[in-house]
Amino acid sequence: MRSYLPDFDLTTPGSLAETLDLLAKQPGVFRPFAGGTDLMVVLNAGNLPVGRFLDLSRCAELRGIQETDTVLSFGALTTFTEVRECKAVHQHFPNLVKSARLTGALAIQNRGTLGGNIANASPAADTPPSLLAYGAEVELISVRGTRRVAYDAFHRGYKQMDLAPDELLYRIHVPKPTGRTFHFYRKVGTRQAQAISKICLAAFARIADGAVAELRVGLGSVAPAPARARNAEAVILGRPLGALPIAEAQKALLVDISPIDDIRSSAHYRQVVTQNVLGQMLMELAKS
Image (cartoon, rainbow, N blue to C red; front, side):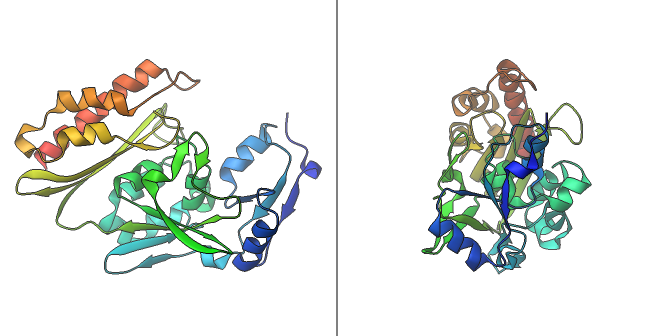
């Protein structure tokens, strides 16, 4: 049963300033949306709660990829296609390219946005594990100004974010890696494409003097929100590549995740496969 469109109210502000003004005057009343790819699924299923929505498509300030010597900055309305086609992303953040390629079909990639993937706050979203692995930072904006939050502190629980009712996700800042680096991304789903992940794991490591000098592992579909595998990271950090304690890290990973049974998979499957993918990543890291 589909939703009845006349029950919904849609406002399309002409600028970012107008959008922020509406959010400030009526905080919590409007639900902003970008490409609408996640929203339309719920709408067509008849499960979208009736409410007031803000179309952000005319907010030019939310668009564009900006590059400095040390950072790549993505506007919240950057599409997955724009991520895939950006040479600088290919050069510095191959995991982000892979996750963008695996997000739906080409039509979804043309409309879906990086900011929407974050703010929809699905634990199964494809790009958040990569952003966690790369140490991203999100910039939020309101009429009160802007503030930055480390992305690994942004998600507070299922569909819960460090985002005030009058704020928008403005930009995503990702620091460029330096030195000898290792990148890994693996999504496990029912199919090779157009599938919601059963588990997702992204990893970034910096190697110095034959050892793991820096490591971040981002996880999807195995916790109430996208999460870091901090306990597994701690086991590996500082270890020489030739002596990575894989079994110990796999055991520590169980503390980092809290998978559930759902229509796509079982909690047990997710535990086993996430451990296996972590092991695969570490074996590749040892050979890098």
